[in-house]
Image (cartoon, rainbow, N blue to C red; front, side, top):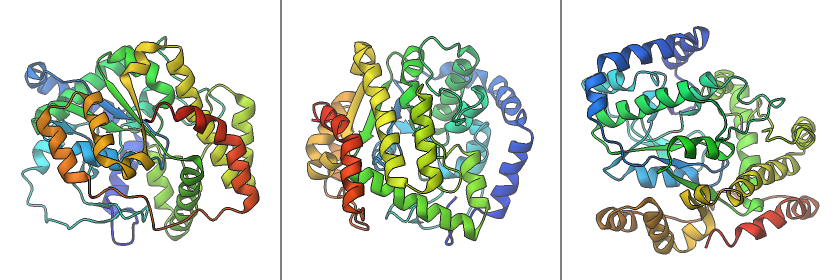
Length: 370
């Protein structure tokens, strides 16, 4: 939950630490919950789930908020943490608690996005870290493709989605997940009708945003070490003092990115990581037309420059009805604009380096974001 100082609330930190100390507790409670609400789960007929799968600082949160505002979608909320494993029980209970209403406030990222306990947030990574060991270990290839045995995880995730849909009377599960680009093959096998939205920004701007967040969260961690502990528990290693290179099969490139982070060459490190993540996704789609059809690339710049047109593209890809499409356009076409709270402050040399590393891929992506 956000706070005025953007530090982790004491009670939440203690509960989260309990789940971290006993990693089997959450899954055990999840199975117990599923067994007690089996009838409700069997009555749910889920629509195609939607995953927003861009690298951090790509505009994914805006897309999450846009879609979460539609009546048929539901996503994890700030208030779900740390009770993520038992969404049915917790949401049923919290809806009946006399909790005070807290006005939205700017989130810890200081990027003008205001949130409260009912705002959507990315928490699905907690489950991936439990079911697939060594997530976020730079020494391990993080790609999870269609040939991976995910039987137990598939059963869990299906039940988890159904519980959220049942308790909130929704039709489609929605999740933002910054680490899902190398997992698209696995998810598409598991959910052939799913839709994936891949936001991306000009690498110069996206790298600048990542560098800004890295400096900010390093400062927040110096003020309160619980910040990085919280980020680690929910699976955010994109920036801050415990950031990690993402290994997608090229050990040499992973080591180069980690070395950049270690010596403070953040622009180069993030530019390389940008190419690794988006390049891997593009290559995977080129070899799998069915997966490519399930994915929509969204340029954050174009979304801000032509919101009505991009909302139409998004609505068509997600097969939204006319009412939802009109609602999105009416609500968001005048709210979307490019970040103006910071400007890239790279040296000329860093700017040239980012262009050299990422310019080729950014050019290749232009045919997919229009």
